[in-house]
Image 1 (tube, rainbow, N blue to C red):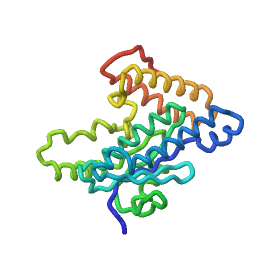
Image 2 (image 1 turned 60 degrees about the vertical axis):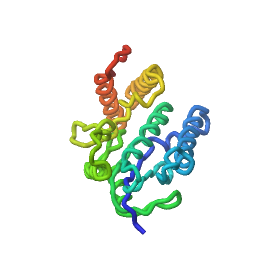
Image 3 (image 1 turned 90 degrees about the vertical axis):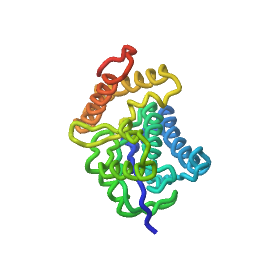
Length: 245
Protein backbone atom coordinates (compact mmCIF):
# COMPACT_ATOMS: atom_id res chain seq x y z
CA UNK A 1 0.00 0.00 0.00
CA UNK A 2 1.30 3.44 -0.93
CA UNK A 3 2.37 5.73 1.91
CA UNK A 4 3.00 9.46 1.87
CA UNK A 5 6.73 9.91 2.40
CA UNK A 6 9.52 12.41 1.90
CA UNK A 7 11.99 10.74 -0.45
CA UNK A 8 15.50 11.47 -1.69
CA UNK A 9 17.03 9.88 -4.79
CA UNK A 10 20.81 10.43 -4.71
CA UNK A 11 23.34 9.48 -7.35
CA UNK A 12 27.06 9.10 -6.58
CA UNK A 13 28.85 11.03 -9.32
CA UNK A 14 31.70 9.26 -11.08
CA UNK A 15 31.12 6.04 -9.13
CA UNK A 16 31.63 3.85 -12.18
CA UNK A 17 35.02 5.46 -12.85
CA UNK A 18 35.96 4.99 -9.19
CA UNK A 19 35.15 1.29 -9.47
CA UNK A 20 37.27 0.95 -12.62
CA UNK A 21 40.25 2.65 -11.00
CA UNK A 22 39.90 0.70 -7.76
CA UNK A 23 41.46 -2.41 -9.27
CA UNK A 24 44.98 -1.02 -8.97
CA UNK A 25 44.52 1.89 -6.56
CA UNK A 26 44.17 1.33 -2.84
CA UNK A 27 42.88 4.88 -2.34
CA UNK A 28 39.92 4.28 -4.60
CA UNK A 29 39.27 0.99 -2.83
CA UNK A 30 39.10 2.92 0.42
CA UNK A 31 36.70 5.42 -1.16
CA UNK A 32 34.35 2.66 -2.23
CA UNK A 33 34.54 1.08 1.22
CA UNK A 34 33.67 4.46 2.74
CA UNK A 35 30.55 4.68 0.55
CA UNK A 36 29.38 1.19 1.38
CA UNK A 37 30.13 1.56 5.08
CA UNK A 38 28.13 4.76 5.29
CA UNK A 39 25.16 3.19 3.55
CA UNK A 40 25.36 0.28 5.99
CA UNK A 41 25.44 2.75 8.90
CA UNK A 42 22.29 4.52 7.70
CA UNK A 43 20.52 1.18 7.43
CA UNK A 44 21.66 0.15 10.89
CA UNK A 45 20.56 3.47 12.41
CA UNK A 46 17.10 2.85 10.99
CA UNK A 47 16.54 0.10 13.54
CA UNK A 48 19.08 0.83 16.26
CA UNK A 49 19.72 4.59 16.11
CA UNK A 50 18.39 7.18 18.54
CA UNK A 51 15.33 8.00 16.42
CA UNK A 52 14.14 4.40 16.62
CA UNK A 53 13.54 4.96 20.34
CA UNK A 54 10.76 7.34 19.35
CA UNK A 55 9.31 5.11 16.67
CA UNK A 56 10.76 7.18 13.82
CA UNK A 57 12.13 4.97 11.07
CA UNK A 58 13.60 5.71 7.68
CA UNK A 59 14.03 3.32 4.80
CA UNK A 60 17.19 2.98 2.72
CA UNK A 61 17.69 1.23 -0.62
CA UNK A 62 20.70 1.01 -2.92
CA UNK A 63 20.52 0.61 -6.69
CA UNK A 64 24.02 0.32 -8.16
CA UNK A 65 25.46 3.81 -7.64
CA UNK A 66 22.23 5.36 -6.34
CA UNK A 67 20.82 5.65 -2.83
CA UNK A 68 17.18 6.13 -1.88
CA UNK A 69 16.24 7.35 1.60
CA UNK A 70 12.73 8.14 2.78
CA UNK A 71 10.81 9.10 5.90
CA UNK A 72 7.05 8.94 6.46
CA UNK A 73 5.20 12.24 6.46
CA UNK A 74 3.42 11.23 9.67
CA UNK A 75 6.55 11.05 11.84
CA UNK A 76 5.58 11.45 15.49
CA UNK A 77 7.59 14.65 15.80
CA UNK A 78 6.34 16.10 12.52
CA UNK A 79 9.88 16.44 11.18
CA UNK A 80 10.23 13.78 8.49
CA UNK A 81 11.87 16.10 5.97
CA UNK A 82 14.20 17.48 8.62
CA UNK A 83 15.43 13.97 9.51
CA UNK A 84 15.90 13.19 5.82
CA UNK A 85 17.95 16.35 5.27
CA UNK A 86 20.10 15.61 8.32
CA UNK A 87 20.84 12.09 7.05
CA UNK A 88 21.95 13.62 3.76
CA UNK A 89 24.08 16.30 5.42
CA UNK A 90 26.12 13.69 7.28
CA UNK A 91 26.28 11.49 4.20
CA UNK A 92 27.50 14.33 1.97
CA UNK A 93 30.24 15.35 4.39
CA UNK A 94 31.32 11.73 4.83
CA UNK A 95 31.56 11.16 1.08
CA UNK A 96 33.14 14.47 0.07
CA UNK A 97 35.90 13.85 2.60
CA UNK A 98 36.82 11.01 0.24
CA UNK A 99 36.49 13.22 -2.84
CA UNK A 100 33.10 11.75 -3.75
CA UNK A 101 30.34 14.11 -4.91
CA UNK A 102 26.62 13.44 -5.15
CA UNK A 103 23.63 14.77 -7.04
CA UNK A 104 20.03 14.20 -6.07
CA UNK A 105 16.41 15.17 -5.82
CA UNK A 106 14.04 15.32 -2.85
CA UNK A 107 10.27 15.32 -3.11
CA UNK A 108 7.15 14.10 -1.32
CA UNK A 109 4.38 11.77 -2.37
CA UNK A 110 3.13 8.21 -2.56
CA UNK A 111 5.68 5.43 -2.43
CA UNK A 112 6.19 1.86 -1.31
CA UNK A 113 9.64 1.62 0.23
CA UNK A 114 11.63 -0.83 2.30
CA UNK A 115 15.27 -1.86 2.11
CA UNK A 116 14.49 -4.29 -0.72
CA UNK A 117 12.11 -2.37 -2.99
CA UNK A 118 11.25 1.23 -3.76
CA UNK A 119 8.64 2.30 -6.28
CA UNK A 120 5.75 4.65 -6.81
CA UNK A 121 4.97 8.11 -8.18
CA UNK A 122 7.21 9.86 -5.63
CA UNK A 123 10.14 7.60 -6.54
CA UNK A 124 9.79 8.56 -10.21
CA UNK A 125 9.46 12.24 -9.31
CA UNK A 126 12.60 12.20 -7.15
CA UNK A 127 14.52 10.35 -9.86
CA UNK A 128 13.45 12.87 -12.50
CA UNK A 129 14.49 15.77 -10.28
CA UNK A 130 17.95 14.24 -9.96
CA UNK A 131 18.20 13.30 -13.62
CA UNK A 132 16.77 16.40 -15.26
CA UNK A 133 17.08 19.35 -12.87
CA UNK A 134 19.92 18.83 -10.40
CA UNK A 135 22.58 19.04 -13.16
CA UNK A 136 25.36 19.99 -10.71
CA UNK A 137 26.68 18.24 -7.56
CA UNK A 138 23.71 19.36 -5.51
CA UNK A 139 20.68 17.74 -3.93
CA UNK A 140 17.69 19.80 -4.97
CA UNK A 141 14.57 20.04 -2.83
CA UNK A 142 11.12 20.32 -4.37
CA UNK A 143 9.41 23.49 -3.12
CA UNK A 144 6.19 21.55 -2.57
CA UNK A 145 8.00 19.18 -0.19
CA UNK A 146 9.25 22.15 1.85
CA UNK A 147 5.77 23.67 2.08
CA UNK A 148 4.15 20.36 3.06
CA UNK A 149 6.82 19.70 5.70
CA UNK A 150 6.27 23.12 7.26
CA UNK A 151 2.49 22.65 7.22
CA UNK A 152 2.77 19.27 8.95
CA UNK A 153 5.02 20.68 11.65
CA UNK A 154 2.74 23.67 12.20
CA UNK A 155 -0.32 21.42 12.63
CA UNK A 156 1.47 19.32 15.22
CA UNK A 157 3.07 22.23 17.06
CA UNK A 158 0.96 25.35 16.39
CA UNK A 159 2.62 27.36 19.15
CA UNK A 160 6.21 26.55 18.27
CA UNK A 161 7.99 29.72 17.14
CA UNK A 162 10.95 27.81 15.70
CA UNK A 163 9.21 26.72 12.52
CA UNK A 164 12.02 27.99 10.31
CA UNK A 165 14.32 25.07 11.15
CA UNK A 166 14.20 23.83 7.54
CA UNK A 167 15.27 27.21 6.18
CA UNK A 168 18.64 26.81 7.90
CA UNK A 169 19.34 23.64 5.91
CA UNK A 170 18.16 24.77 2.47
CA UNK A 171 19.46 27.47 0.11
CA UNK A 172 18.05 29.06 -3.03
CA UNK A 173 20.34 28.79 -6.06
CA UNK A 174 20.81 31.40 -8.78
CA UNK A 175 18.47 29.46 -11.10
CA UNK A 176 15.62 29.58 -8.57
CA UNK A 177 16.04 25.98 -7.40
CA UNK A 178 16.22 25.05 -3.72
CA UNK A 179 19.04 22.74 -2.67
CA UNK A 180 20.50 21.16 0.46
CA UNK A 181 23.05 23.58 1.92
CA UNK A 182 25.21 21.05 3.72
CA UNK A 183 28.52 22.92 3.48
CA UNK A 184 27.18 25.61 5.84
CA UNK A 185 26.27 23.22 8.65
CA UNK A 186 29.31 23.81 10.86
CA UNK A 187 27.24 23.24 14.00
CA UNK A 188 27.15 19.52 13.16
CA UNK A 189 30.89 19.30 13.91
CA UNK A 190 32.12 18.73 17.45
CA UNK A 191 34.86 21.30 16.94
CA UNK A 192 35.08 24.26 14.55
CA UNK A 193 38.69 23.34 13.79
CA UNK A 194 37.48 20.00 12.38
CA UNK A 195 35.02 21.87 10.17
CA UNK A 196 37.76 24.19 8.90
CA UNK A 197 40.04 21.24 8.14
CA UNK A 198 37.18 19.65 6.21
CA UNK A 199 36.60 22.80 4.16
CA UNK A 200 40.29 23.09 3.34
CA UNK A 201 40.36 19.49 2.09
CA UNK A 202 37.25 20.14 0.01
CA UNK A 203 38.87 23.24 -1.47
CA UNK A 204 41.97 21.27 -2.47
CA UNK A 205 39.85 18.62 -4.12
CA UNK A 206 37.75 21.14 -6.06
CA UNK A 207 40.83 22.97 -7.32
CA UNK A 208 42.44 19.68 -8.38
CA UNK A 209 39.33 18.57 -10.29
CA UNK A 210 38.88 21.93 -12.03
CA UNK A 211 42.51 21.91 -13.15
CA UNK A 212 42.39 18.30 -14.33
CA UNK A 213 38.97 18.13 -15.96
CA UNK A 214 39.33 18.23 -19.73
CA UNK A 215 35.65 17.58 -20.48
CA UNK A 216 33.61 20.79 -20.35
CA UNK A 217 30.48 19.12 -18.97
CA UNK A 218 32.43 17.69 -16.03
CA UNK A 219 34.38 20.88 -15.42
CA UNK A 220 31.11 22.84 -15.28
CA UNK A 221 29.99 20.68 -12.35
CA UNK A 222 33.13 21.49 -10.36
CA UNK A 223 32.86 25.15 -11.33
CA UNK A 224 29.38 25.20 -9.82
CA UNK A 225 30.67 23.59 -6.65
CA UNK A 226 33.48 26.15 -6.47
CA UNK A 227 30.89 28.94 -6.50
CA UNK A 228 28.93 27.13 -3.80
CA UNK A 229 32.10 26.82 -1.72
CA UNK A 230 32.84 30.54 -2.13
CA UNK A 231 29.29 31.52 -1.11
CA UNK A 232 29.60 29.32 1.94
CA UNK A 233 32.81 30.79 3.30
CA UNK A 234 31.60 34.33 2.53
CA UNK A 235 28.65 33.78 4.89
CA UNK A 236 30.53 32.12 7.75
CA UNK A 237 30.32 33.96 11.10
CA UNK A 238 34.04 33.42 11.62
CA UNK A 239 37.23 33.61 9.55
CA UNK A 240 40.06 31.10 9.44
CA UNK A 241 42.00 32.34 6.43
CA UNK A 242 39.83 30.34 4.08
CA UNK A 243 40.41 31.43 0.49
CA UNK A 244 38.04 31.62 -2.45
CA UNK A 245 38.58 29.29 -5.36
